[in-house]
Image (cartoon, rainbow, N blue to C red; front, side, top):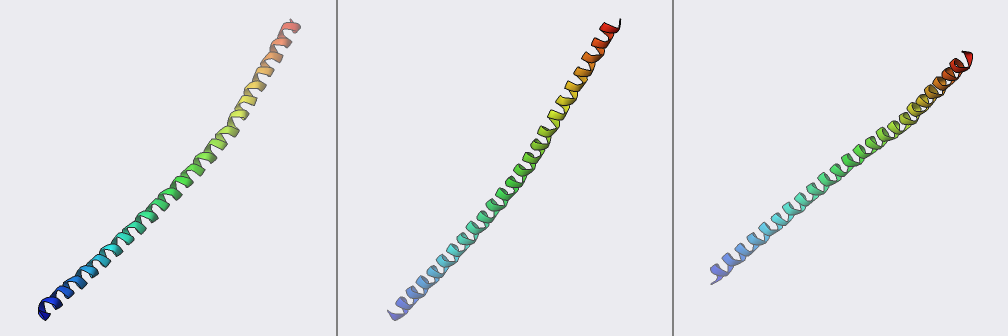
Length: 87
């Protein structure tokens, strides 16, 4: 009887130990997934910042081009005006 009880107790301790190991592994895996998600979030944030900077630069370039086109148009109008009244 004692032998059987001791054997069952040993098996219970072994199962408990295995359960603790599995729980520890799950905890480590969850921690790794959390770190990976955090890294992906940082990468996405960096890409978003870069995209934002690029869009901001493009936004600055467009008005300059627009002003240049306006200047060209005003110059062309002035040239036409001068030609019309010089003739």
